[in-house]
Amino acid sequence: MYITTTIPYVNARPHLGHALELVQADVLARHHRRRGEPVRFQTGTDDNSLKNVLAAEAAGVPVRELVDRNAAAFEGLRGPLDLSFDSFIRTSAHPGHRPGVERVWRATAHDLYTRHYEGLYCVGCEQFYPQGPCPDGHEAPLQPVSEVNWFFRLSRYRDALLDLIGGGRLRVEPAARRNEVLAFLRAGLDDISVSRSAARARGWGIPVPGDPGQVVYVWWDALANYVTALGGGDYERWWEREARKVHLVGKGVIRFHAVYWPAMLLSAGLPLPTAIFVHDYLTADGRKISKSSGNAADPVTLVDAYGVDAVRWWLLREVPRVGDADFTEARLVARADQDLAGGLGNLVSRVAVMVGRFLDGHVPPAGEPLAEVAEPVHEALEDFDFRRAAGAVWRLVAEANKFVELTRPWQQDTAGRERSLGTLVHACRALAVQLEPFLPTAAARVAAAVGGTRLSRSEPLFPRLGEGRAP
Ligand SMILES: [Zn+2]
Image (cartoon, rainbow, N blue to C red; front, side, top):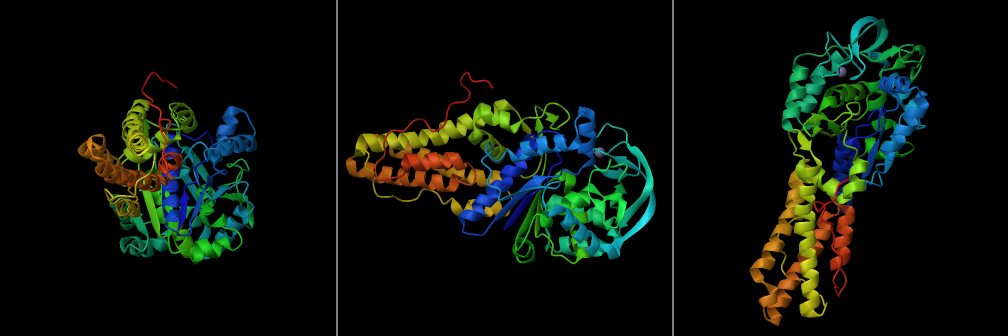
């Protein structure tokens, strides 16, 4: 499976919304890897956005400096968030990107033409609108633009896209998002501008092949990353031959991914992705998280304060498949204390203590499994329902804790204790396996605590976060 995230523009440091998409993609990648499937998980940054240029001007630093610094912050999420991406593409630095964009451009030449264009451009969205204000809420007034641009015959691909998406060959999930795309297609497609004057772009970006006065529209440039980052034999392996190619995207960029990108590929005669999963947005303390609004929850700060398990767990266990989710530190702490310190940590430590006290640490033979977890997790992840998948793992924690209360091994005879503790050790080991895609470091700690043939009393697996700690 080839799994990609969108590549964010780098006018500022990453926020929790980026962490959400990266962690979701990471869960998919880890899940499919452990099933023995070949996986390529790719992310990166959109360095060529005009927004980066304007942010650098506002900050009074060279564009290259700002882009390098912020792109490094995105790539640097890997350690703190326990991400397992195989490839990180920076569109201004990857050696294959510019030639790749030029190849896609040339392959679509039969659908490209020049036209004088007048329109209102939102730099926040990097797109034109017929009138202001920006429907996405950007406050800066739209810029009137009048110039000769290259246009792409998007209108030509309307019927083919209706067919592909309506017929399910290109899956768009959840269903409401698919319907949104279909409604957009049914309303008809206009051709789109796919270049801008190099002067307006301040010379930043990829020049249009054969027309150096224009640079390639940043969305065209950015979308191409899904194929341009595949150098050498990787392109054939992961784009031509791979049966499952999944893009994870936010709801704000659905049109680019479900309409423009497949149309570009159809025009170029290239294979299409197979699925697009659209997540909604996070708010923080009830407000939109954005890089410029100043309330951005910084994922690295959160990991420093609460640990990676608590941050990943909140993103996976609390964010619904459909609908926005509101982040607060209080919710993160409550969820971690209830589930991790309370539910899982408590279970593992009770089991280890009882095996130590009653069986002198000797692990009894594995007993009956308590709840089937692997299949419900897999089914939920096939639906891109991360919360349901995390919930399926959690059922086993709940069942095992219930089992302790029900059997009360401390009141049983020796044979009864051995049976009960055998079941519980088995459940804890199954949890270590099932948790790995969601909480890789916690899973390793659980595995260490209940692995081997002799158990000893272990340190608490998870700290209590709510007790007098503040970031
Ligand atoms: Zn806008």
